[in-house]
Each structure stands twice: as structure tokens, then as C-alpha cells.
Image 1 (tube, rainbow, N blue to C red):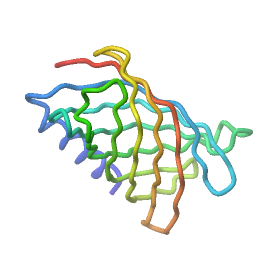
Image 2: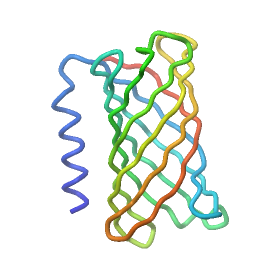
Image 3: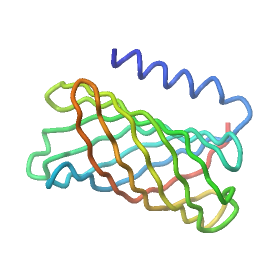
Image 4: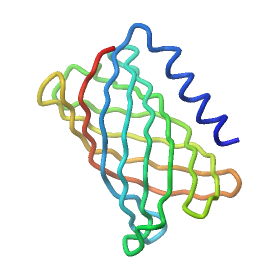
Length: 159
């Protein structure tokens, strides 16, 4: 089930790649699961349909226990994002719903929904830095929610 979901998300993103631009980048931050903070890093690819609407998929690695780096969790969130100020200002807020697939270090698989929001700072046209907040509600096979927050960065690449 997990590989089918991942394949669908990648295929869906490629279908719409004919006339827009891609932003490729990364992010680092923390995720709060209960009372335990964990370190998170990610690669991200964001396809811009228009000035107001994008589709972003992240490939995330979470280290949920800072004292045990062997416990790595893999996560693949994908979101439809809306930029209400049309990405024309130096400070550019965004918000959007999405889906998340997650595989934990002990090979448990989860599927769920998320909502995220953030603010990008654009010092020039090719670079973006920002801060982001996301709530993920994993509901298959069991109900589990967590908050995530982090710093982001991206570099625009057109192809």
C-alpha cells in the first residue's frame, strides 16, 4: 500500500509539470510528538501552477529521539498550497491541506492528513527562506497527531 501511494503522488506531480516552474530546496526543524521534541530535515520540491497555487511534496527524515540517532522515521507529505498575497511581496504567507505517508524506524506504516501554514521571506527572485508550522493527524492504522515547526529554504529552478 505504501509504495502505491508514493508512486501515485510522484506521478500526479509529474503530470502537471509541463508549463510551470519548480522550486527545489530543503528544510530543517523540530517536531513535537507528545512532550518529546525531535530533529527533522527534508528535501522539498514545489511545483508552481500559478502565482497563488502550488503543489509541494517533501521527503522528510525525523529523528524522534535526540539521544538515539538510529531511530529514523521517513515521512512523505504532499500539500496543495495557496498563497493569498500572490507571491509578489517580500513576506509571503501560505496555507494548505495535504496527505502524509509515514514509515517509522520499527517499520510501522501510517497514512493521514495534514494542514500547514507558513511565511516565506524572499530576499531575491531565486531564493526563499521561511518558517513553517504543520499539524499532522495520522489515522491509519491508528489515530495519532503531532505538531511540527521548522525553518525552510528553497532555490528556484525552471525545467
